[in-house]
Length: 396
Image (cartoon, rainbow, N blue to C red; front, side, top):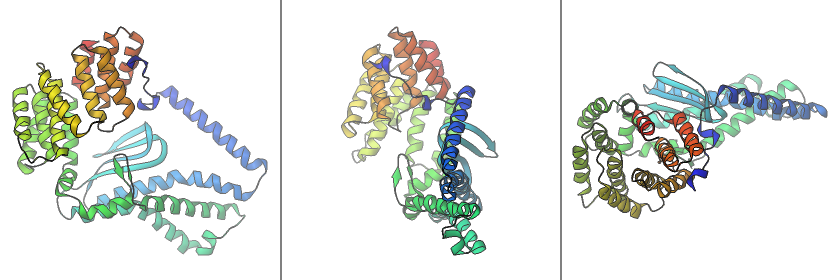
């Protein structure tokens, strides 16, 4: 039953009290670690301590290496993130947002080109600058202290610290240079290899990074008309950009021009040679328009969902859309269970805010006030869209 679903605490921002508890636990673990080191003291045991100690500074150096390279080649940096999990601190420096998260084991930088000149080569350079900054520091250490001093074994605490720093650089920088893909991202190594072969559309999306964020912000705050104006202006420059085309249709619907949105989608779906992956995105857009309009055509929505599922049968984002549409039609338990299934699939393409909003509505309609309150609390912690907030306020 969907009302049994519990949203992990990691999906919500950390409260002040939780931050204090996490700090206390971290301090306790650190003290136990120090006791283990000094109980039967051996200087070499300190290498573990120094490895952990140096990891975060090297992570910061790595990410700021990316950011500095982006700045030097004339790109703008939208965001620098240190760690993953809940955001502990964040601040804005000019156009760049810096966020520090709970677990500082990894990070990323979101740069955007200012123009279309040499985007592919500059992208490769920016990817290389992260591990490059670390290995540059290693080179400086070797030049200052000598190879033997940095890498030979020693019982002197200072030399153990120096060697531990070198190991952190080799492990962290070397690992990032391996070519691999993670959920929604690529390693620096794969980024370097793929950058020369970026498609024209990928280059366009990098050029649009700041515009995309501005448009998304306008949509979040309910400024659909302003967002639509910005999209139409950008479409004059990038007429074939898929993201802009789909976002234009979605925003037309949010601006109260559902018929225009439907017409745009139908025009795109008439093409016989549309690749399956692009057709699937237009079908999802068609369903999303019907979900968000005040006069939904559920037959169109269901047909769009069926066609999209034939292309990607197990997609979590489509399951979430279908579940939300069932909740709107008062098929509460069926829709709620679909939304819970979609949540458990953890599909990055699925909309967390939308799922939590409709889970809250479904739980409210099912008469489960405890589950409704839980889903609403989780929704309000992650939601940034005025329209969804209004929907939850109205229906719960």
